[in-house]
Amino acid sequence: GGLRETFKVRKISFGVGVERTYPINSPQLDRIEVVTRGDVRRAKLYYLRELRGKKAKIKELREKQTVS
Image 1 (cartoon, rainbow, N blue to C red):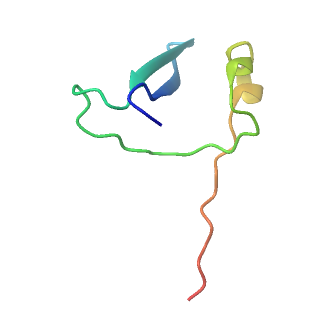
Image 2: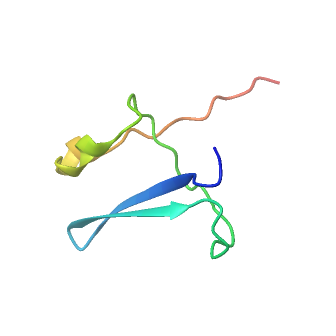
């Protein structure tokens, strides 16, 4: 963490991969809402840029159920 901490947003728009980097502490950001989380085994996901189709899909992380 720190003042220079960033996060990256990836999506496919009109068949073209788009990757944007945003600083977390930017005054232009009102809020950050995490819609889905992915389960990956690497810190750097640069290899996703060359992959196409199902290979480029990240497995969705499942929330652990608490037993009450």
